[in-house]
Amino acid sequence: MRVYYFQAPSPKPRMEHVRADLLQLMDTKHVFYITNDGRNSLDVPQDELEALAKTGGSMLDNMDALVIEGSTPDADVGYLLAYAMSLKKPTLYLYDKDIANKGVLKYLGSRQIPAHIKVQSYSGSSVVGITEKYLTELLSSEAAGQPTIKFTFRITPQIEQYLQQKAKKTGMSKADFLRKKIEEDIIGKEKK
Amino acid sequence: MHLLTPAGMPKTLPKITLLFAGGATLYTEGEGVFNLRSASDVKQWMAKVPELSLIAEVEPIFLLPDGQTLEPEHWNDVLGIVKQKYAASDGCVILQGVDTMLSTGAFLSFALHGLGKPVVLTGAPVAPPNPQGDTKEFMSHFRTLGVRANLINAVQVSTLNLREVSIVFGNQVMRANRARSAPGATFNMFEADEVDVFGRVDFGIRLKSEQQRKKDPIHITKLKNVQLAVVSLHPGFKPEALADVVREKPDGILIQSFGQQGVPERYWPAIRLATQKDIPVVITGQGAAGLVSQPGVAVISHLTESTLHAKFLWALSKASNSRVVLDLMQKNAAGEFGFLYRDS
Image (cartoon, rainbow over all chains, first blue to last red; front, side):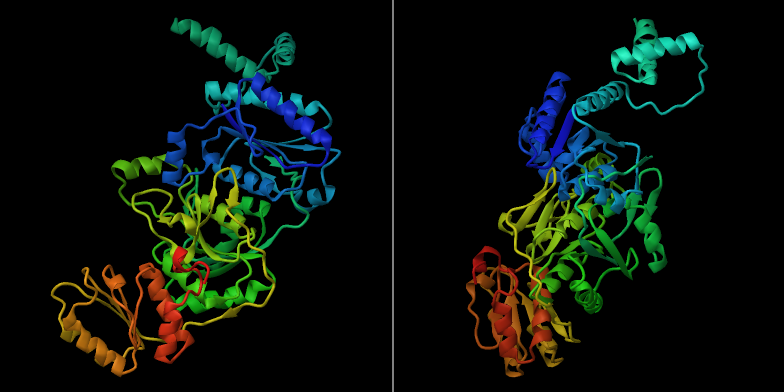
């Protein structure tokens, strides 16, 4: 999976730690990233760059997701969010509760954006857990394809308790856990 | 749906004028095509592109419905709107059809004097009615055929430090009066020499160099009701036909010549007749580079066809004396000669 990571330059040292922690997380999860400050784990093949230049596409088109650390005001943040909305690109928008400019929240606070753009505030090191959960879900949905069919499924309290434990242990949602089990243990076995 | 909490946004957003001039066809996945037919559709159109409000405070102005071509007869309306909104806005984006975008862009580049902010032209890519082969693949490759991606890029460019009239299309930001149509079916429907590309779209939009904005008032040259005769010489074209054009006494004559020897001798009597009548004549074409300008006749070989035509209309609107008109035609006015006259 390819992720574009954006974080505006900040004089606050702790923001540098956020960047380092998130990039380390992506390395751990084998997520390829390109960042706005050139710390890339992905070398885009030359033929892909040439094809993009020729067809008129943008590099953002070829990313699977965006992760934006938006605590520091920057005009590019608005552009990236707008482009992500337009392309229906999965995006995690993060901001530090202690730094975020409340005046700006007031400015556009009631604007609705689509579900594929996830907005999350964080405090301190919680940014890693939030991002890890997001990436895990994304990797899982990438592997399985996006689930779109909805139906009601009643379960017992015991199953609910079991699912809660599993969700906590695996870092997946209960629904993702069940989908994975169905694919691997039922569909997968039948195919064999 | 989530509530947007744009903690990383600047305190105030730039103010941008968005002019609907016939190129706003919108494609929304699951909803299909939405054409802007009248001013009353603008609100609905804007509601379909809420993401614009993340980049700028956009003031929409309706001029032409989708499908109507922006012609020279509308250029003064465009100039009037740009001038009226100039002081209060940080930039202007003009949405128009692709067929006349090069001409509009070129004319605006000459007619807007002392431009201190970006004026950006863009529009919806035109999808062929029956895609075949490469075109079919091209169409299926992009999810957002329509104006959306171009528009977001254009609005972003209009917030940057660029004192030029530019065309933003596909992944390029180009000097409008140096752009030309690109071959093949891609999102880059226009192209320009590298020196005339201001910037490109990759993970954002980066300009090669920034130009400090200016707050000085802008001056405009409105298009006058001038008659410009455009004559395309070709083998078999009768000299009498050119003489007939001269006798109609147009305000100017643009001659597109052919061959490697400039203008064949048989046409020169008609050209001399024009100069005697004080009609400014501009000669262009592949062989024009070998000619030299002479009184009443300017030879220009480094402008695109659209730019030459637009510049001639601008020069005729700006001056009535044929010598002054030809002087204007030969001087760099807005970077239109490319690298040849970049420092003049």
